[in-house]
Length: 268
Image 1 (cartoon, rainbow, N blue to C red):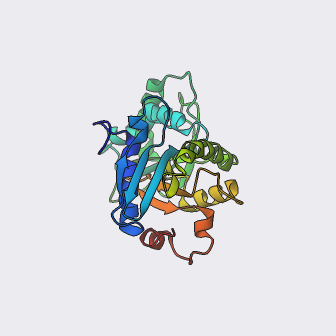
Image 2 (image 1 turned 90 degrees about the vertical axis):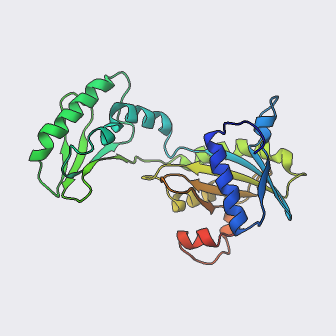
Image 3 (image 1 turned 180 degrees about the horizontal axis):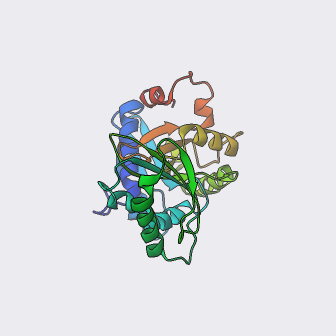
């Protein structure tokens, strides 16, 4: 690898993406340069990959499903998300708790919320009925929770973030991609293909279908001058990152297939 010894998180996604393309569309494709690491003067694209048949310029971007989602998720995990691990072996049922997105406010005692939630789980959950969704309010926690208790061979606490109305996702996506297009446009004469790789790690609220729809809404007529293809990197699971070509022109005449079938035979 050319560049720094310690890769950024997105570098591993880009490396996996190039490996996927080499296995499915462009044999022998390999990363040959990391321009943004090498160029200390101006902002540059993330990677250049080459094979015997051509050159691909790649720019990575991460997009939140909801505005400021990473900020809210960080606050959520700091407040109560750690209890999933802490209470392992102490909850003898499968307890699912739905917490609406963005409901952990600023200016509260995270430690106090965590203590109240922990106490409620240990003291009150044993009295809850099985197989019934229940909305609960807990003293000291400034938002309601929806809980479901069931018998399972895999007991434990499972926290779920519920979605909210998200009407501006396509607009926010387009703003980010348009900025990336300006960086990629510099490689129009030196590379055969200019690619934006959009990463999202939201298991509950994002999907291949939603990303395809958002890209189609954003670029229903044509792509910016600096982009030939838009790919979606789904990093929501602990397994391998999954990649889908969500470019409208690539999908226009492709045969109907499932997401898993498409992973094996992606449109070019």
